[in-house]
Image (cartoon, rainbow, N blue to C red):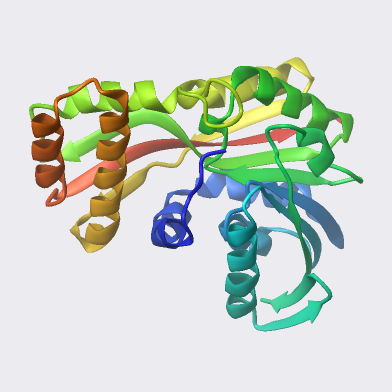
Length: 280
């Protein structure tokens, strides 16, 4: 899987939190309403932002397994979660977090999800979740994961899957060409095989629907303005670097676009959230 820095993940977390579809989060909470406890596996956990966004919607007692291929991100997750909680205790390599009246047991697993998604679901999870992951994954891998989740009869929730929609303001003459090149780059292999890119949400819905799951989706776009100037600049720089790697546009045009976008007034980036619940 392509790597992401803790700084980039920290910069995007507030925008991610605002963008999540509130209705789907409420629906997720309803799935486990009345239960005392829940066991969750978080795939591609990064620094733990998905746990921080979801925990308040789940039962009082929670057991989380955070899974990532990057040891540095897992270490950053330990530190950020401990700082976020009302109280944190180390229990060997695990954490016990007390936050908002909830008791969370959190373990950390370093593994190559691309090679063995089934291994990450060892045990009997009630919920499998992820954020900003599946547009990086391949069509076969998405199907394989869906079957693994269904084998556990677990619920599935993922947030912030990229849709391929970017709208910058004010417009720039090269916006369309830049986006086309960026989408070509996004469909390249990110460690899981050729990436699904903007098709990922439809592929997830088809895979879980074929397994008898009830699937609902909701839009979760980033809406960034000058108050998030740092994130706008980092987003533009990441897009420009991906475009450069395709070789599809001359450097002078990429640089001119980046210079303009570093001072953009706003950007909308399309994402979709998805909840799949088992008939069992």
